[in-house]
Image 1 (cartoon, rainbow over the protein chains, first blue to last red):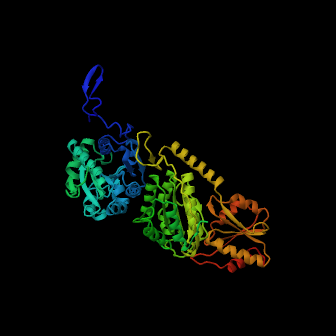
Image 2 (tube, rainbow over the protein chains, first blue to last red):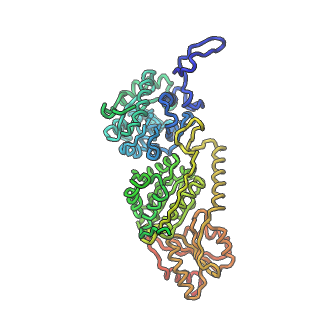
Image 3 (tube, one colour):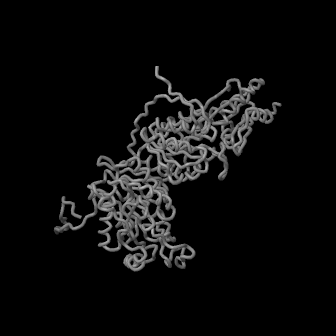
Amino acid sequence: MLTGEKDCIIEDGEVYELVYEKPLTTLTGTRMHYCPGCGHSTAHKVLAEVIEELGIQEQTIGVAPVGCSVFAYDYLNIDMQEAAHGRATAVATGIKRVLPDKYVFTYQGDGDLAAIGTAETIHSINRGENIMIIFINNAVYGMTSGQMAPTTLVGMKSTTSPYGRDADFAGMPIKVSELIAPLKGAFYVTRHSVHTPGNVRKLKKAITNGFKYQQLKKGVTFIEVISNCPSNWKMTPVKSNEFIEKEMLPYYPLGDIKLPSKEDLAGLK
Amino acid sequence: MEELDIRLMKGNEAMAEAAIQAKCDAYFGYPITPQSEVLEYLSREMPGRYGIPLQAESEVASINMVYGAAGAGKRVMTSSSSPGFSLMMEGISYIASAQLPCLLVNVNRGGPGLGTIQPSQGDYFQATKGGGHGDYHLIVLAPNSVQEMADFVFLGFELADKYRNPVCMLSDGAIGQMMERVVFKKREVPAIKKDWATTGKTKDRERNIITSLFIQPEKMEQVNLSLNKKYEEISKNEVRYEEIFTDDAEYLIVAYGLSSRISHKTVILAREKGIKLGLLRPITLYPYPYKRLNELANKLKGILTLELNAGQMIEDVKLSVEGKVPVWHYGRMGGIIPSPEEVLENFEKLAKIK
């Protein structure tokens, strides 16, 4: 991303054209703790880029979950609150209700949002809280090192489904986006991924929309991100991206699940 | 002269009215007997006057909404009754650790379990000794009248802001439900500067983080130490109690909340019989009036604690008096409220006066 201020760098006497740079104001620069190849780093970076490009750092408050992204506030240079496990959307509700003109988002994993926090997820969306929910779905509990998540695929192995998820025993993986989309309080529901550069660009557009639509105060913007977990999937990063393509996406197809109508978007700056 | 605003109200309603007058920015709650009037009153009265009333999907959600809104720098509260308050314990522990000022009201009913909707003081341990996980304390206020249910809302918010600490008002089903005269004084609510709150990171400051996560042991211990330092400060400054007929007392009842109302009458009945009985009513249950009770114990023959539980506060009374005098407990449970005569009779038996 070109900042406009400097478009070339000089290293060892050579002049290079600057073609890419991390967001400078909205990332703290702290080295991320995520495993090599993990989608969280990409999702964080995209989020930080959007906040920087929209120029809303001063108006944005984020809520971090319990899970691998529990330390999100170490990396994002914005005001943030760390919520109890599953309660991020309740915390975000509290923030947004008293600061209605700020941009408020939660960043949550599948265990946080779709298991322990299901009630808060459903009800905050049903109330049409004007927040953005970023839902990182990597089909596993990452932080506690690889247990079965509500979104773990049928047959997929984890430390608590060592023989593969048995749908008769553990139920089917939940498709949260499809589940919540019919609620009137869900304004924009979309599913993206971070496994290819093209998909990352689409995700960035979705997060931009997710923030912008908050101005309309018409409900939740819900962005599911299919992500990988090389460490707990016991795969190389490359293999894990192939797994997304071959196994995750057929069950969790990418694309918009609920789009606002043109009338809905009237008045958007 | 200013005209007095005198009303006849339930304790729960008086508390709710006080919340609006104390400029409570948001109330988050879930219905539960015997305190549903609070959410009802605020849902009716807040719109158009002051504050946002929001009915949450559970007490778990309400306490986390309180966390978010308090972290955003606003004056917020919730209320519930025993089973609902138990559901909030995780959130309260987080709030205590993140040092978020807020007011949490428990209108105590009988337990354990689903229990009964009748008044009880069975949640003393939960309110004063932690309740949730980890080393923390709430400032605990125990009203014994409808007037105090209103007054302690103002006091509670003031203390919460002063110490950046959650304040618990521990009431009970009788004080919450009964109707009494209550006077609302005109009060100025000072604006509190909360430069730690998450209101959006401006260029002139570092980002603000509200968290209770301190994963490095060294950091966690420092947080524990600094919390403890604050609790010591609170213990030094904020002990509140009321004494009745303690000057010449040979015996003392220690009781709070509803029990202190019963005990007051018991003391009068005892005095009529020539028994020199006094009453100490702790107003703050945390911090507890250990020092004053220890002083009083020097000239007493015995102390009775009256509690609507199996004997919880008696442990703090025993800690206070350091074995100087015998300490007896009398209590009823299950929502049964003893009469002053019943308390006197049992006191006489325990003190072997009869």
